[in-house]
Image (cartoon, rainbow, N blue to C red):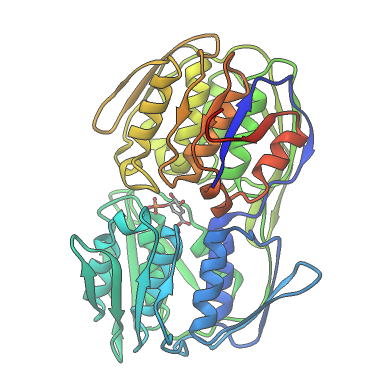
Length: 446
Ligand code: S3P
């Protein structure tokens, strides 16, 4: 654990490739693990969260190897074939691993216990337990439906129709993954579209996924159980949520020009880029194409003067749910007020992100108001003073967002713990410094 400091730097330039998409990497390992035959994954994010998923799938019988060529090869057990793990599954910081695996395991006749770090042990799991109980799974948890959590799946899981009470791709995916090993057809109804990587990748593995638009505009996504998954190759695109950090860093410095190559631009993930464009940023997608069922492009970002504050469309929240910390940094430098609403989910991410962003920005001299599920930031058109030591609270995106801001403030910004960054963006400091930023480890008393 080290303190990192980010100092003011010159405009950013260069071409970089951000690490593989975290959501897609988890799914590639999980789906490969329930496929008979060899799944070959290139571009896998080798961050701690994904490595926890790999370890869990190994503990349940999948053979997973990383070759010297950087390719990951998965030999799965087949759907229904997961074995009971010998010990607890340690999930570290990873909510996605935990919630998706509760779904997958909850429809297998095995028992597994999940443990995690202090951040994950605080996060709500009832949202996945409720539909899984309807399918026949049983749970024992710490108080409030939190980790440590033990799930026991039924001999014969029941299919359900489940309307999501909260816009969550993790809950949707947990139910669909359980549906793969349930009798009959399982449907998830979502009234607000959330990321559809599970649906896209299931199709890529040869599973039939039906999507129907209902009278009220909601979508019903259905899978029929016991369809075999076909082994295939998955080429993981760069993560748009990781690309968001260099993108905002470049936007904030006039004269910057960077290219982020081969980033996923699934329309349910690009809310930040659309919002930056609305704020006046010069962000363009080039060479758009479809690879392994997902849309990818090169993202070009140029710094072209101060952004303007806007009211962010709340219907866009799910498509940029992980990007609010870094968007808040852009808003803090914009000219005028940026209003962000519909942010209740930010309170139950790796940290209470609404609180951590608000407290950190205030310490950097930013004027703002925080509501129960909203954040209003008053920018002056210039970067704030900076100079604060930010509490990271085991949250990678809080750490990276404030390091981005530190690159333009007069006084450096420090974050108190660099360790969480490795969960999603292991080479963050090196990649940002290659583009021209000045991020370095400092001693406790500096
Ligand atoms: C994810 C869904 C989102 C997101 C998380 C990854 C996924 O969580 O915040 O980082 O891979 O399905 P919610 O489903 O809780 O919104």
